[in-house]
Amino acid sequence: TSIFKAIGNGFGIFFESITRPHCAAEPDLVLRIRMLSAFLLLAGIISFFGTFFVKYLDFGLRVTTLATSLMLFIGYIISRTKQYRVAMALAVIVPVIPELAITIVKPLHMDITAEAMWCALPLLAAGLIARIKYTHIVTLSYLAGIIILAASGLLSVGIFLPLIAFVF
Image 1 (cartoon, one colour):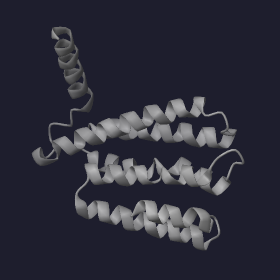
Image 2 (image 1 turned 90 degrees about the horizontal axis):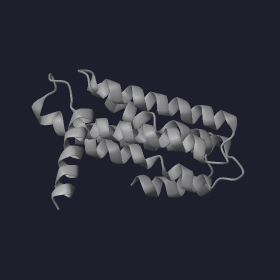
Image 3 (image 1 turned 90 degrees about the vertical axis):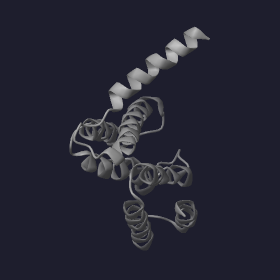
Image 4 (image 1 turned 60 degrees about the horizontal axis):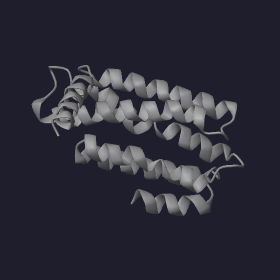
């Protein structure tokens, strides 16, 4: 068990070093900022590797996903500075971009409904890293965006209804 304790302590030190917020961060937000940094870093890594391992992405969607990864990594770097609020905005906006692109382009080999459900991930992140007022604003913005996409015909009823239900 001592080796597991040593590994755990080592991981804790490593995690602390890669998520430590700027010293000017408000003390009551330090935990949220650390979660923000971890979310942006992990989402960036997953998005980056997903670009190469998902077989059915065409060139345009791969570029979109790589650009998303880059923006998430930039958000991670920003989250470690005094400007962590900018990173919070990136955390709830950027992960939706590839999912919206997939929903609008509708590649033949993808289940669009399943892909659209990934749009809820930033909402979950907002609930963890932001104050409740900000989370409500993000949720209402998402709902407005979904309704606009459906009204414009870019989102079918078959995707619209499950997505609205999933957001709530």
